[in-house]
Image (cartoon, each protein chain N blue to C red):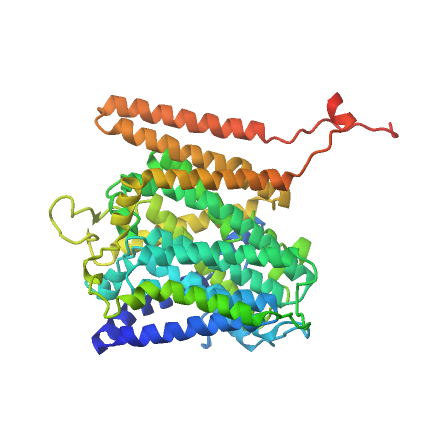
Length: 173
Length: 404
């Protein structure tokens, strides 16, 4: 019973957070509303006993993505602070259609098996199990992902460095 | 929800919310007193037992000062700048306090009254260490929120400095903790503390020592303590994100900062300094077959493990205060260079060294183990020295062009 109450409260908070994040004109307010949404989602994961996913949700989405968004906003001129200009929302119909289509496609497998099978009891989402899985059968995948991220990091550093113009003084030293 | 569960939750959480703010009050007094002694001053010594006629006469080394400060803060005017974002200006101090308070429950503090409480068992999560880092990271947001909501140049500068600093130093912080997690094979804070029963603390191993030093430095930066107090540098940007805060909001920030210091010191104690182990506390009974639960200690009297835990936290805080009294503040470029060019490579190498040492140690005898340890120590020391030499600024004696 208490889990039901918690679920509905958290869902309401998540939906409200997402709505505010979309509707707010002030971008900083929007980012913080988005973080409320992420936090509610993380607690929902915790409610499903997926503690690792909950922790990663906070770590990655609030800790990293949120900060990145704030950085991007602060480094972009003309969007800092209150902005009362109307955001252009042409093509809202197509946007809505695409969003609805994605939603339906994602939900389709769930809808098809609708009296949902009671398989959740056998899943053991413990961190230990996850760690063993990551280190044993999926270690190659993990390493490939790590390599990809490293490549992305090096690429980002190279892009940030920019093209260095050869100077006369540099060549002499 | 049954009433029993609510009662258990209250028993588990209320002591944390009482003990740590009380310790915060004591710590402010300790810090002011210690800093004053370092700077050849006396520090607070007038406020005595409050609300009695002995107020002035029995001053008790000024121990009543935090109480007087608290009352003063409550009655101060709450000033919000006209251009400020009023909602965020109000929310920021609260957001600063919540994560700090929240992570306290992940510390393996074994209070005598929480032996068999269900909520306490629930917080001994298998991924407690990850949760700790995830939630402490939220502090960055509060600082940014405060800096942005104040609508003040200095506040925003302080906020951005804080974000850059905290994001940079979180990496060495987490990587240094990885070593301990690797060695124990668990992310559970209680199991990590239990693995260091007796005097098998991780500081006493080469990789543990290196990781502890990195962790301590990164923790200083993470909590904006001197010498990493750039976000709130009084002399440069007028207290940074604090600039537009007064009264009780400022007190909340102050409280949040100190609770965060307690929490991160508590994590350092858990990871490297053996948790609640110490003279008079027997731990690791699970391996000896004397207990079935994960976290069971037998101490000379109830609560001794908690007392050792808090004593270790205060030892760390004493070093922090000492550093604040002696070290000058870093420059921004030095700060970033130190995190990315020194701490990060060193902590990555530390992980590799620890991994190899763990494998080499598996079936090694005493002497082989000692040799492995010496080799590890030498590698780590040489790397630290090499990184130091590599990052030395290329300063030549000043050349005068026009003046002789």
